Structures are given as structure tokens and as C-alpha cells.
Length: 293
Image 1 (cartoon, one colour):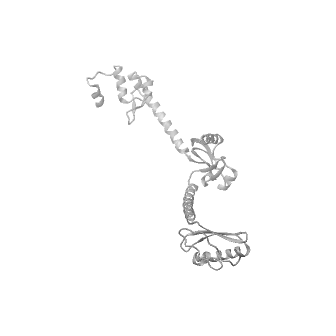
Image 2: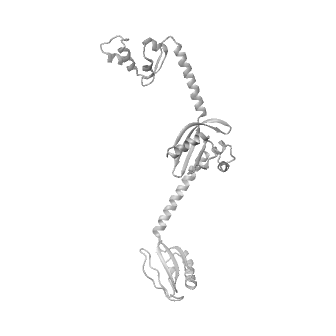
Image 3: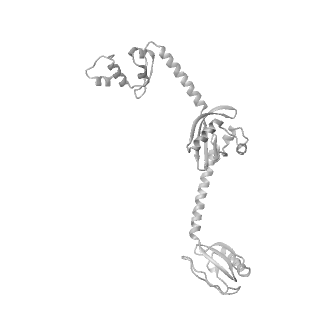
């Protein structure tokens, strides 16, 4: 009380050396870290002389952290000291965790930004909020910011509607769809995954793969038509001994039902059918004969 009266100190802080009272105040130089003493002394002087409130966090000589709050209450100046070491330790741990997450995010963002495929992120309303460089080139934008500013969409409207329906149902969208990349029409494998705050997606160009698959399919069909013209019976089995191809001569030779052959029977099932039709000669030990065959 008063500008020159000695302080009345009440209470103590566990693990913190108690402050030393003096004729006019508290000897902070014997209690706090030297770097904090001058600022605290000035703040207390302003509080006692002019009633200016303050609040600071300081370190004690024992390494603890305290919150020092000064307020004018009536004609008295009240100084409240609280141990916040646990709070500062938790804050330090949080800051360290944030720093590591920020570093990991920056590394992941750099990887996504240089990936040779279009990648994008949307907010909860479906608006584009981030795209990588490849996406910007795919939509013929000058850069990523230009693509976001224009809301340039890579996927066609029908595909975006399908993605939206999947997102509304809380499901990821996966599909092979056409799209214009740059100035060329391409085939893309699209994956778009929802989250609580929006969604993220990417597209893989499979145009060449699809073209090769179509080419191989045409070649396979051509070979099948050629084999089907042969008078020699031909049957092809896979590694599991299942029938994968037969020609007309094979079916005609054994008088087999096409529905049965199209069901891809195993070699054993085929022999059993021929035996049931009495197409094969009888054997005393049919199991041993089949195994040898």
C-alpha cells in the first residue's frame, strides 16, 4: 500500500525459491533471471507510481517459469505471481511437434509440387485451394496461382459430378475417365479422397497403357479368329489347368456344350465330362489314369 510501503507477501510457489522482501518491494535480482529483472522492476515502479497494469512471463534462477501480473486495486498495488513451468513445458512440446509437422508438410508439399502428374486439393465447398505445377500446365495456366484464380478444372463436368456424389457419400472416387490435358485428349485414372475439411485427388495418364491394351486385345481377337478357322482342335489351359480358349474344331470334335466350355472348366472336369458322355474309353483306375495324363 502506498508508493513507499514495504510489501506484504502471502503464499508460496512449490519448487520456487520465495521472493525476498525489501524496504520498498521485492529483490528480484536475487530471485529472477538477470535478463528479466530490469523489465520487471520498471513495470512495478510504473504500477506503484501511476497504477499501470502489466503481465509478463519471466524465468527464475532455478530455471522455472513464472507469470507476474500487476494490477492496481483501490489504493494498493497487487502483484500476483504464478508458476507456469508446466504450461511452458507443454507449450515447448507443442512448438516442437508443430515444427516437425511443418517440416514434414513442407517436404511432402515439395514432393507433390514436383510430381509428374496433376494433383489438387479442394475445400469443403468443392473449390480448388491448391494445385501442383503439373496441374497448372495441364489446364494451360501460367502458374498455380493463375489456375486457382480462374478455378481451372481438369476433369470434365460429368466426372466432377461423379466425384461429388462419391464425396457426399463419404467415399473415395476411383475411375478411368477422359480429359483434355493441355491440348490433347487423354485417358486418366483418377483418385479423389474426401476428408473432414474437403478432398484431395490426383490423376495418372494411362493413355499409352490403354492404347497398348486395346492393341493387344485386337491381336488376341485376331489370333482367336485364326485358330477358330483351323480344322485341328485347339484348347489352351492356364497355369491352374483351366480352359481359357477353345476353337470350333475342339468343340465339334468332342460334341461339348459351349456353355460348359465358356465356364472355364479344369482339365480334370473336362475329362470327367468326356467320360460321362462315354466319349473316352473306360479305365480300371480312372484316378491314376487322369493323374498320369
